[in-house]
Amino acid sequence: MNPHRKIAVTALLPLLFAVTIFGLFLVSYRYTSHTQGEERFIVYWAGMRSWLMSGTSPYSDETASYIQALTVRSGDVNARVTYPLYGGFIFLPFAAISSYALARALWMTLLGVALLMTLLLCLRQTGWRSSVGLLSFFILSSLLGYPSIHLLINGNATILAGLFLVAALEAIRSERDAFAGILLALATIQPLLVAVVLPFIIFWLFSQKRWLVLSWLAGLLVFLSVIGIFFIPDWVFQWFRNLLNYSDYMPPASPSAAFHQWWPGVGRQLGWGFSLIFVVSLLGEWWAARRRDFRWFLWTVGLTLVLAQWIGLPSGVENYAAFVLPTAIFAYASEQRGGKKAHWIISLILVVLFLGTWGIYFRVSTGQLRSALLFLLPLIMLILLYWVRWWAIRPPRLFVEEIRE
Image (cartoon, rainbow, N blue to C red; front, side, top):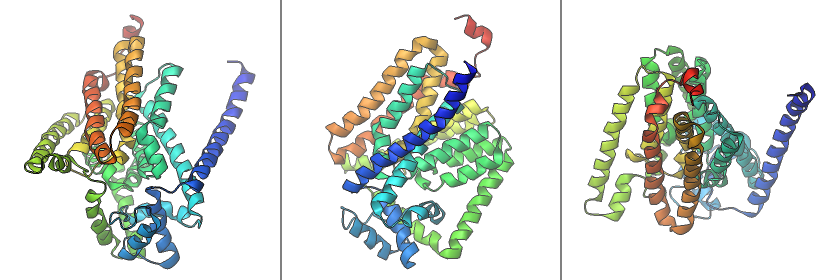
């Protein structure tokens, strides 16, 4: 590249990034100024604002009543704070803004940037370097897919937790162990996203003797929890009380609940049997991944994020923010297997995922939407991951193998 052109491009990129962020904020603010729906951000904002302005615990019934009075679904018993108190510290700057529309627009802008960074990190750690067109299509289809748009509009902090998780994986790959431990601790701001995958990561780190990551993870969690106790001595118990009620949020939220809704007589038992099969399968994959390299570890992380939806814990669209990782793993492994010939397969799958999730949203009722996404999207991701398993976990091809094609 011409040196002058390289300098111009380097100078223009930050400006383009700043203009994009400002444009995203303007669009978000115009939207939030005219729309207040069933967004999740109102729980974050109102919960911390109640604590900030009146000293009321964000987990209290009084705060829950305040939140419910602000939402369009007045009286919803599930409109309660379910994040740990140290996670709430992230929302404090937004809670200090009296204008809810402005606070929500700024939060949506932050989430949009976080989602883009998550996608770029997924490409980096999988090593997927394809054509500009295919990579652009992957990024755009992921950003504009139903799960991403749903989470952005709702202002769901799972996007931020997903960024922390993926960034932690990148830090583990590059052996920045202290930073990795910090990021893993921050990912727990949304406990249900990491409730299954974090134990596997800890198990793998233990098998690799990565003690520094584990030390920083445990140390920061203890430190943040103690800070929370300084402000609200019994916040952990209050938080657990609210968290236990989360399973009732927009049911069915698990295979057992879905099966029970379909077949009240035997559905719950069938659901637990269904979950048990995948728990055993997942534990087998965890054991196989111990002491393996990062590629095997990363594939197993992707599998865990998918199967976590089926092992009995509350699930939903909010957890699909991290599905960009298994999608990137599939795309990279497919191209590694088939070269440029695989581009049309990858493109087809991306189109199916994009149109399929939006098609489900527009074609089924609200009550059926959660059940459809609970089974269909993880099933597709599960098939894709096992389809490319061999190519995803084996070492990269030698240069001599590539030039033969």
